[in-house]
Length: 464
Image 1 (cartoon, rainbow, N blue to C red):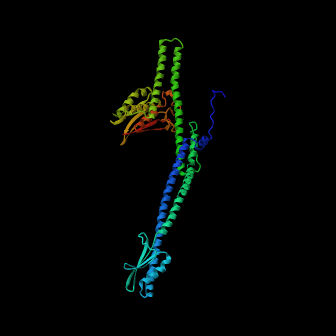
Image 2: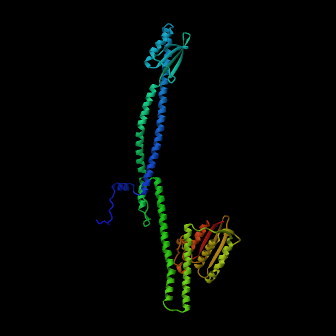
Image 3: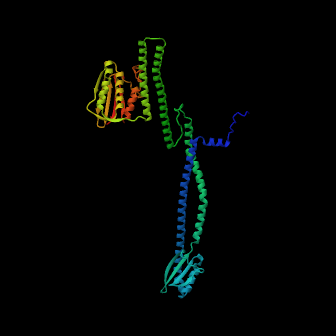
């Protein structure tokens, strides 16, 4: 191998295994989420186990103490019954009777004390009183005297049993938590596996196959909602990409036509010597096409700025009825040239707050659109109506109309409804798109109602 040749990269099997197991960063994030779920499950289970152990330990302690108290009470009752009988048998010898009762109760292993007042008559051997011991006391009347019998027992046996329970809990706790952690990890892995499938399918979707949809069989309800939402997002992206591709193609076509005319006219004018009149004629054609091209570029720039949110409304107070009247006067000459009757009904004074220049562009576009597609002898009318909370600007014509299938798409950029609305009319298919943008930027809306061959009506609704 020559010294200039690149050294081949030796594959790292460990790295390859990790890559195969983890995949892209999305899967690593998924595993991190799995670890979080496992940790939360383990923490919750640990809390439950600790609380249950505390409850079990407390209940067991109370149960053992209650059982010892019941045993001491039973022995105290037994001693209270035996002592009078023994006293009678001993002919009133109280100490001897007390010793006999203590000897009979010795088999139970508890400590018995019999007193007369403060004098101890008999007590269990090796008895050392402890305030922590459990005890039961009884008072006996015999031979005209009062005797006190007390039976007590230490808590050593209970403490020993509780120590066994504590050891069992401490030994079982780590084992149970380990099993719980393993089970939680398995459950989290199984529960998140469909998300991994979704991630694998999503990675295979690119701009060239946006029509592909995520498919998860027998998905849980929550995952079904996620899959449906993601597929709806893909559908919107697919529609947006399609609109963008169509927009680029239409814009390129619109730009190519005036550029081709300008180049062709310049080539013809420069191909040979011509008279000043011929040069002026060629320059007039070039100027006309340049104006068309400039208007198209301005429209595209305005729409691009609107899409990017870079257009700020220059709001001011003005009279909307006066704006409508001025717009009608500006297109009156065009209507007369085409042999149309233009009717303007602006109504009474209506003060409005908005961007006057943009709203003027909206009205001019609607009037120009109506005049452009109305045959000679027809009529175009513009009216302004005021409601309680909104203002309606309505532009109607008796022109060629729009088919129902096209009425919903006339506001799309570069869209022309039918062959009658061709580029030869001088438009670019951007006027109504600008109308919708201006209306929506003023928190309004625009709609079209039309019947093919019987004219159209465009209604712009703006909030007061």
